[in-house]
Amino acid sequence: METNPKSPQDYTSQDVHTIFMELYEKSNNEPYDYNNGRNKSPFPFIGNEQKALKKLLSENDVYEILCSMYNAIVQNTTYFSVMNFISSFVRYKTEHDPILYWKVINSDNPKVKKAWQQYIILKSTWFSTAVHNKELKKLEKRFEKWKDEKEN
Image 1 (cartoon, rainbow, N blue to C red):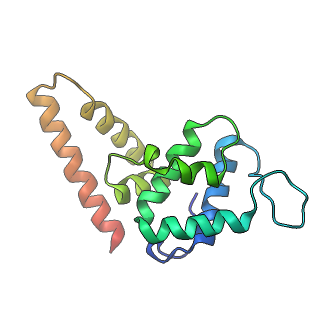
Image 2 (cartoon, helix red, strand yellow; image 1 turned 90 degrees about the horizontal axis):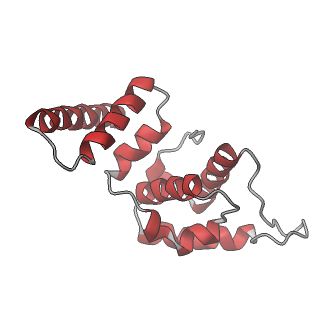
């Protein structure tokens, strides 16, 4: 999914906009429609979208933005623009560590995806047992170790 060779900390509003379009296309199986100023499109103007993303980037962590963007796109089945995302950014923030969550989203490793699903299930269990808690701690340690390995 992530085709940009830059580190997310170095992303510009244009990079984030491109990732939004890629996520949108992958999730909806259709290209993201926008107005580039030359096409007489009823969709939002790309310059306004990038300006709004620049402001959002200056006020928030890039990983929080990327994760929120992912959550917003996969949770909306109809057309969802960058401007819609920005106005509802807080609603789509993740409760998980944004760096870890973004790395899990972008991982091609089925073991990581399976472990993440197991983690979510254990985390949402209301009446957890000692075995559940032990397994949850084990998964948390694995994810922290994996996250640290990928950063270096």
